[in-house]
Length: 314
Image (cartoon, rainbow, N blue to C red):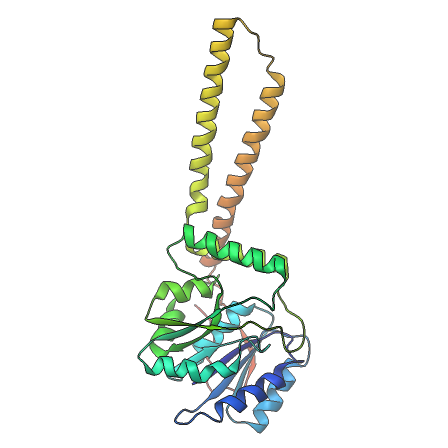
């Protein structure tokens, strides 16, 4: 079983995570465990701590990126370099409790390919973030073919078969929550109580979460592209009805309509619709542009893995 742990500036909590994880896994019989820490271009002492842990514990493997590529790339690198029968993706801040690992293993022993976790509460998150996140899950479930329960995260244990399927998904702009759902496999969900970070600060700003949400929506739904059709139909119908109204008023009642205010309002409305549709189209074109360049999802700078799997695509 391999614990895949993406890290970005986690020097304040990394040793705490390692100690707590060891306390749990050392008590589990019949399984061998390894750590795969991924340093996502940290600016603090995260990599130094990884090296220190690797020197005293041969189970600790680390991958350090050449720069910051993002958490999605870090998870992908960890999965590509995993070789165990099972892999657990979890955060280093202890919001994903290592104490759940024994329960996850019991689920996998029942024949499931994935044991995924669902946050029963969001006590560790600010109110606005909770509101935004719940709204995102409801929206994306309505407009896409993937099913992502509210509170679903990256914290899960997967079988080798599911790991291979996830890694085979070749997109550069990755949205793992959607990928985990899209590949399918027999999954059991378990709840856990959300807590605040053990130390350090969250790396997710509201703007970062918003961009991540847009990434998820455009990765698994084409409904936004159809918005232009809906808007065009609505505007055309409204314009036709208004035109009939003006003609009837003029012919029947002889009322003269001054058109300046109406024309300006209609032009502004149409201009806004056009800009919105162009923005949506541009978002999808940008994704195509990034995908066709076929750049690697990550580049390894340093590692203690003897034969690391890089992501050079050509």
